Length: 452
Image 1 (cartoon, rainbow, N blue to C red):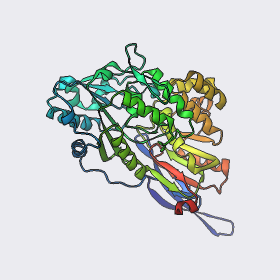
Image 2 (image 1 turned 120 degrees about the horizontal axis):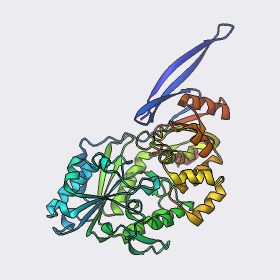
Image 3 (image 1 turned 30 degrees about the vertical axis):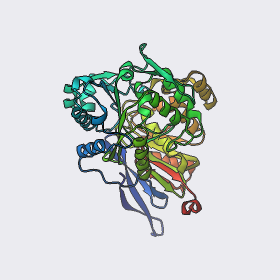
């Protein structure tokens, strides 16, 4: 969450007249801390922040409530049988979900049906997009909690494994669906995730967990090529071919039940949703829109955007979504200042390789159609943005990589970046600051449109 502090800076001309420059301090998340950008008040349009929603007082109680009040289906305790083989698919370590609370609540619900812990397997989302196929054993406790580790089996999905199971082909987009065999053969398949904006799937969560979590790499590739569709963008489901294919893939996978959560900009749980694959997900989407779709009536010359701090700014690949989310509220030719620590560097080798090998947007688009590889989509999106907007990165990423490979300008500190941005587009330029860029979707509407 941003905060403002007004400062008065005074200087004197030769005639001893006082010129007062009012500065506004805005705090932006950076890794696990915050940095302050000082913007002249005359330039600042404001700070675009999510709608404030109170968090629940108790994570555990809220998740248990959702499980007792499923949307569009019966309770897990009614669906499962004592002999049922259960698979729970969870997000990887880069996500900020309360996995321990979610899993323990699910295990309690299953125990009512007589399911024993030895019949439950947890599969980690392989997160191939971020080049981290496996969650390492030393990270298990951080992601799942010590109690969960003692009770159930844990495996990592390998999207390139040779024993994947074919379960069908999507009717609309001819995508051959290959699944992790443990997941495919389970009686009860449960997805745990959060729901946020996603720059080409529309939203994360729900049906998307199957694709990124337990599908084969060719299935993933086939789906990801659809990001070239004009409706494949954040906050859009209708006519979004990526979303439509994801939904059919999840149906072919025969998902039994989902538990999805929506958090506020502090990462605090606002509400949990459980039940049917589609019905529960769509209810979560409504709440995401209430919190994170924010309308403004002016576009800025300069956007100063934080990815949102840890964990969404651990790599450049992860932090990129903040850029994509804010494009509707920056003028053509306007400057984007991205504040993202990136302590783990660029984060995806394919992203790096494509940026070094493919120098323009046309060649990148051809490569997507001909030989798509996970991570290449980030190169496509970044090059597309750079056609219209200079990007200044404030991070710990070495300048060599940021400038020579990823074609970004760099600055040591956010105020240096803002000074450079004013040089590029003029001292009278107007500025939006956005502290949670990976989560929010600011939308421009002319004043006349906003009234209708």
